[in-house]
Amino acid sequence: MTDQPHNPLHGLTLQAILTTLVERHGFEQLATRINIKCFTTNPTITSSLAFLRKTPWARAKLEAWYLYDLRHGHS
Image (cartoon, rainbow, N blue to C red; front, side, top):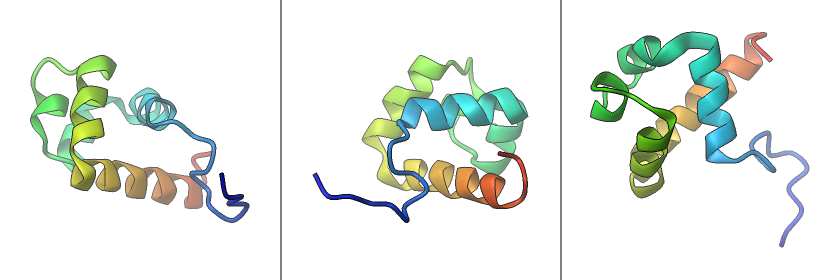
C-alpha cells in the first residue's frame, strides 16, 4: 500500500464521506447537487452506497463535493 499523505480522502471510506454529507446537508440537498435516483427516491445510506460503489462518475461527484465542503470550512 502506498502512502498518500497529501490526499485528503486517504483513509476515508465512501460510507464515511456519504454519511458526513448526509448529516450536514441531507438527502434533499444531495439530490439537488447530484441528481441521481439513489438520492431522490427513498434514499438510504445503504442503497446510495450500493449505487456509488458501482458508478465511478457518481462517486467522483460525491468526493468532489466532500472536498469542496472541507475547503470551505465545513470540516
